[in-house]
Amino acid sequence: MSLNNNNSSSRKRQDQEVCNAIDKFQNDLDHLFYEWNTINIVLESTRNAFAVSENSSEEHLDQVDKELSIAYDDLMAQVRHLDRRLNKMTLEVHQKLLQQPPPVAQHPPLNHY
View 1 (cartoon, helix red, strand yellow):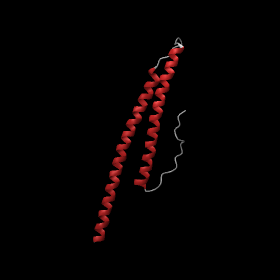
View 2 (tube, rainbow, N blue to C red):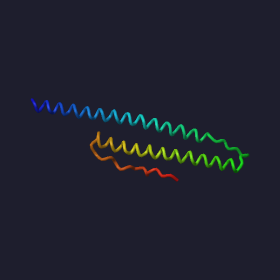
View 3 (cartoon, rainbow, N blue to C red):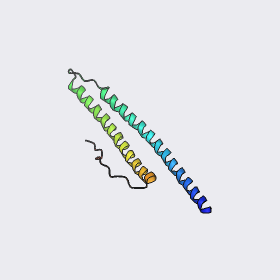
């Protein structure tokens, strides 16, 4: 009977640990989704921020190029950060919930051009 109680207690503890891990991952996913939405909003805003017409001066075009380069560099840094966090979370899910190593990533790392 004591062995049965120990198994039951151990199982409940394991179940609670899994539930806690799932709650943590859900919170992390919610945060990452918020970050992705923020990146997407900034990207769309950047795409529409500068109006360029045929009559634009070279100086104006150079300034627009400079501002867009800065904005896109910042966005790429945010995307790389998000990618690293997603990869880290994938590793944690496999370690804590699936008890096995994660599959090898099939996509190349994000590079800045």
